[in-house]
Amino acid sequence: MGLVAYIHGWVDFFLSWGKLVQNREIGWLTVDRKTGKFMREQQPLWKKIKLLLLFNPLLEWIDRTKLLRFVLHEKATHAGKVESSPASKKKIKSFVDFYKIDMSLFEPEDINAYPSFQDFFIRRHKPGVRPIHKPDDSTAAIVVADCRLVVYDTVPHARSIWIKGHNFTIKNLIQDDTEWQRWHNGSVASFRLSPQDYHRFHSPVTGRIKWCKRIAGDYYGVDPICIRSDIDVLTSNARCAVVIVTQDFGEVLFVAIGAKEVGTVKIHERFHAPGMLIHKGDELGMFEFGGSSIIVAFEPGRIEFDDDLVYHSNRAIEVDVEMGMSLGKATKPGVGARGYQYAGKLKDDVPGTGSEAGRAARGGRSYKDVLKED
Image 1 (cartoon, rainbow, N blue to C red):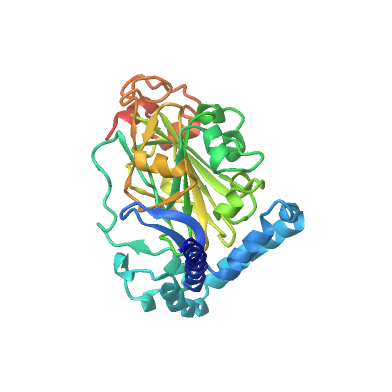
Image 2 (cartoon, rainbow, N blue to C red):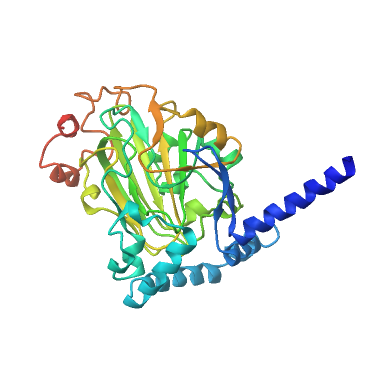
């Protein structure tokens, strides 16, 4: 009986994998936060094979050549043009069918109402389908997108489990020689969006914009196979970085990272201006066609991530989450940035907030006055 049970177990194993491959459920292992069910993400089989070929110890050198980077960039640019054409509209139905997208969550629901695949890709949620966790509580941070998520208390912890690039640091991520130290050993949340996801992203916290900048780069994929390889995917790809000054979390760094077949990362123009108010849940920007990733970094000791997120992340399991869900809570509410009290003691001489451009954007008001306004 023992031998029969052993053979039966292996047969079940291979049959289950055969079913997963048939259903294209061959992506990274995730857990649905709502149901607790473990599953694998749907993914085209050929894409999976290409990732395994390019991102492995033997062949990773291939993806470090300038030629391949140029090809990926050109493919991303070309894909953006193709998906914006009226002819691309015919792809929408098969895409919706393959990924089983529930169009009742979006407006418009009718796929024929989208002029192109690109318009469909940046579709909007219907109001209310993604409720914001504790909308009036500024000490509660939220998930920024429909995605798969891992969280880590420190950057070294994230590097030991999830982000394996040789040169991943906050300094390299934001290409800054001074500001990076604020988040150097801080807490990190990594959000990964797949092509089938809603591709608009939202603020995790309430605060004021300190600065926003665009960083040029390449277009590697952001599948876990890529991120957990030795190639510096997150610090090499094109990206936009935004800093939000808050009352309860200090300064929060938000970095939206493009990927293979993502031609554009867009931060809405109004959030380029220093001093601009943003509420948690407000739409901060969007990605155009393809998979993509977001890194949100908090200063050390300023956030306690939710227990379930920490538990699965420490086991290298992504959590399937929805925008607006709880991310964590502030550990030092009311302290503000740089240890100053948020209302009244955050000075104008904080780097990046006292420039003439910043004052102009704030209508000549001091930064502390802007912060105190509702």
